[in-house]
Image 1: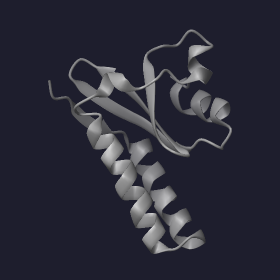
Image 2 (image 1 turned 135 degrees about the vertical axis):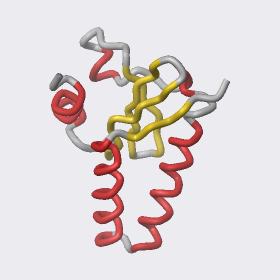
Image 3 (image 1 turned 45 degrees about the vertical axis):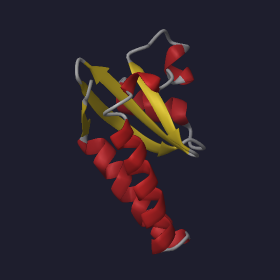
Length: 108
């Protein structure tokens, strides 16, 4: 089965900010490489969305509607809804993920 994958506006902004940050600190070539790898992981969700783990920060709260995959150290947080995958967050896993996930996903 093939799933449609969508990036939310927040996830697109995450990619843009990540690209700019890496380009400044590590160079444009490194930024291109990281974005290509993240995009490959995201595309792969179209074939295997259930392979992701539950983020431990959310799982500990009993929230099991979101999953995550990695291109280390980057975490890609998404939600599988029917035949659609919605990517909500793309972030460096070394950040305060508890606070970031609370702000981004639990603000509803």
